[in-house]
Image (cartoon, rainbow, N blue to C red; front, top):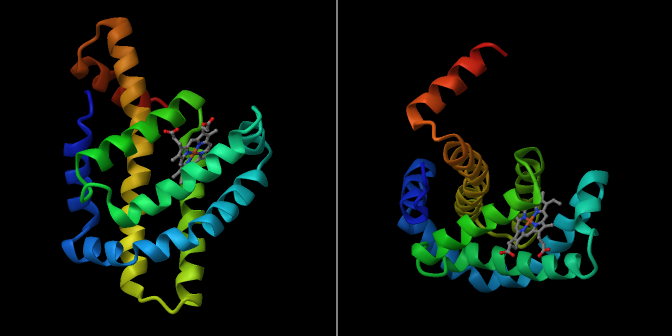
Amino acid sequence: MALEPKAFMSTLSKRVGLTQDDKALLKSQADWGLEIAPQMADQFYAYLGRDEEMNTILHIEDGRIHRLHSTFVQWFHEMFTGMDDWGHSYADRRWKIGLVHVRLGIGPQHVVPAMATVIHEVGKRLETDGKDQSLKNALSRICMIDLAFIEQAYVEVCSSAILSETGWTEALFRRLIATGARSM
Ligand code: HEM
């Protein structure tokens, strides 16, 4: 069940329809992305801070929120640059971001609305700056890919932990999940 980040990236790119035109457009707007990234980070952490549970996670250790601000800016900018044309490095980085959140116990219930906030805030800024709808579409696609990496990390980590602890086969595991889902 081990996930290969580059292969996952290719699958997701096809699935969400991230095209060469989208990539070219994102790259052409990379400076704008970097320019607006600090404001996006402020809005993102203001949103997380309004939730008691997430606010506690953000402030659990000194300096965390400061570190997060700069990693967010970097993450946001990378969606525009694609790092290595949305290749191995991009996929590995997204996979590792997913693993960080799994380790911290930050679940899909936190991450999905958080990504919706990013898309919403970028959408507002796109309008203010008179950017084209095609940029909004390209950004939404890459955000969905990044979100899928974080979400999939949960599934992969949980599955491989159970398989390695129990020695079950993947087929048995899938059968148990299907049975469990039917009984809920
Ligand atoms: C759109 C969803 C999210 C994105 C794109 C995102 C992005 C990132 C990135 C890029 C990192 C740095 C990873 C690394 O060190 O390699 C990170 C770490 C972290 N994120 Fe998120 N994040 C998201 C959602 C959340 C949510 C909902 C929370 C809830 C509080 C959260 C809390 C944290 C924390 C606590 C860390 C570790 C900070 C540290 O101690 O270094 N993130 N995130």
